[in-house]
Image (cartoon, rainbow, N blue to C red; front, side, top):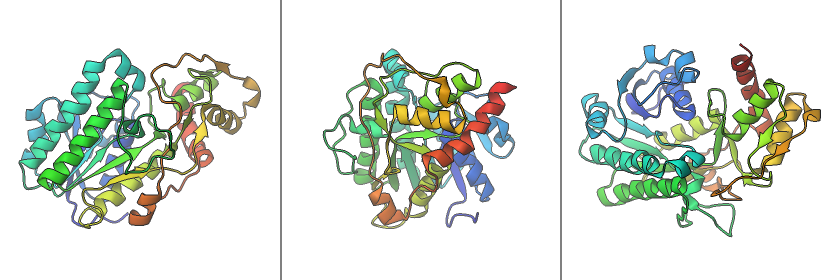
Amino acid sequence: MSKMQGMRRALVTGATGLLGSHLAKELVSRGIEVVALVKEREPHSIFESEHLEEKIDVIDGKLEDIAALEHAIVDTKVDTVFHLAAQALVEEGVKDPLGTFEANIRGTYNLLEVCRNTKAVERIVAASSDKAYGTSPTLPYTEDMPLRGEHPYDVSKSCMDLLCQAYAHTYNLPLCVVRCGNIYGPGDVHFSRLIPGIVRHIVEGKQPEIRSDGTFIRDYLYVEDVVDGYLKVAEAMDRLDVRGQVFNLGPNKPFTVIEVVNMILSVMGKKDLGLVIQNRVKDEIHDQYLSGAKAEKLLGWKPKHSLEEGLKKTIPWYETLLRV
């Protein structure tokens, strides 16, 4: 891949997470210097397995610490910021709302304020979520819909999203917001999430279990497609029709939980294993999926992988990890 025009040095917050590690890896492959603000290590992440720490500048710290952010943004003279770090689990948001608000809301306005006070940052791409929209009677979500998060995680994403838009429009900060549904791929070790959890059960010879009744509808995006979307946003940031905008990255083909589980069982050759439906989900939106039409029209982005294709590239990683 060629080096991105105008981008020399990029900060990635959340670089040890699923999306952050794949994004950092891609940036390195394009010859871009990468700085990572790292709160904690994850032993099985792509960040660790690909030895990214040897290829980038790592700053230990967290978003809530504005001094750490100043060091990561100002002292290192980054020109690009990919803000991906967050408390990213819905259930954890219910258990620890304060910690979720601190990381996702305070962490975001800290980062934006540091960026506002330095002239070196030329582009910021911030990760929001489909959860920011809350419950809507009309689907798919489009970027002009109001943000109506109701539960702690959802509210934290609505707030960070609005903060980003406020800084873009009030201070002309060179910023775009990206909203995605469920991202999956090699390196995600949050086994409370659907795809990692189901694959682990199958690899371990257990009957897969789901927390919901199986009828919940969601988007599922392969991580490499999301990286491609973030980079397309960053590359187009100097365009007047892009800067300050919000973009949904959606596959335009949502699935029910049961459909996803059945596809995993089929790909893994375990159709006869069956499924345990726990039906214990609370404080989660039933149906959520995004229109990717704006991103396709303005950025030329659309996912390259179907769900089945993405699963075929993802499942072997888990089989290797869990059978060691």
